Image 1 (cartoon, helix red, strand yellow):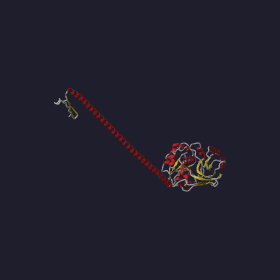
Image 2: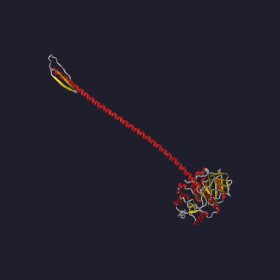
Image 3: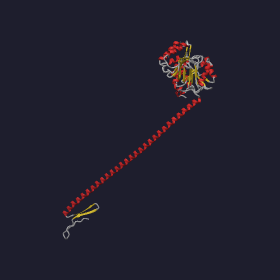
Image 4: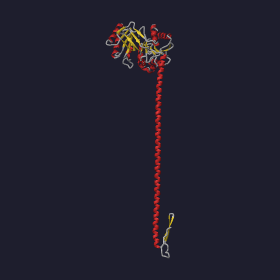
Length: 439
């Protein structure tokens, strides 16, 4: 399947028993034709859901802006709704554009069908929500549509076959063939979007345009306005649908030829789509080839997917998401392991620091002890010096006293330390000698 499919969301294919929800984004509608259209959908095998308050009207609108926008947002979010079809066109779709939740709508792509004023929603949803939309009959127009129109609608939303639209009464305005994504719709409605933030991007697109009850000069004015705004500078090709009650088709085709006289892209007129008897369904957002020479618009692939195909794609996306989650978890675990190793290294470094600090403290303690011992030794040395000094002083005293005793013929006994010193002069012996004793 071409890579461009990845850029746009394809809705699930409708099957008998699916539920189709009805919305009214624009004007009020005739209840009788609306009822007959509901019956046709039911007879085609579908359940039909009409929200409470859908039949409310506010002058030329089918309810307030918030009321109409709320129905669209809710039905896209409702998983029980498989497709959404508009009740009628008229006017008012442009008013609700700021109130739509484009992200939520894009997350829940569904078959969305309408035309005329619904052109606004078809193009904006395709551009902003990146989903395929369907330019085709609405509930109020189904009642008067031929069987072929209804069959083509069901083929577009419920078949695996590609769509080919043949312009049996087509006119080649500019020859050639080109491929691009189909977009467009009602000319007046597209013109009203120009200059707003919701203006479609027509670059590399096959632009389909149609209208009803617009005089030729108004068609000229709208085309000229869009041309001056640069809308057509890079289009791939143009296909014209019905221009009912717009005067002579010859005049309309001449206006188109004059507007694009310098263009090099193909232009085909006469597609049976839009405001006319046989409003064939055109998917928007799907690539096709416009062949102006052979009067055909050939789509490259189906506009819907089988439910199982859609489920498989969802399963594949979930698997990829799971794989990414597992890789993220693995990276987280590796980061956690690196963090744990860093913590361990930090703890070891801290332990070495603590041991070094303890060693320093012990060394400091040993140094303090050594210093204390030195101080005590110094004190003991001082005491020893003091004792020797005292001893020396005593010896000096003894020596002095000895001299005195010697001078006086006396005797002195002095105890020093452990020994006993006797210093003195004994009386003369018979031989007349003097004797000193020291024990």
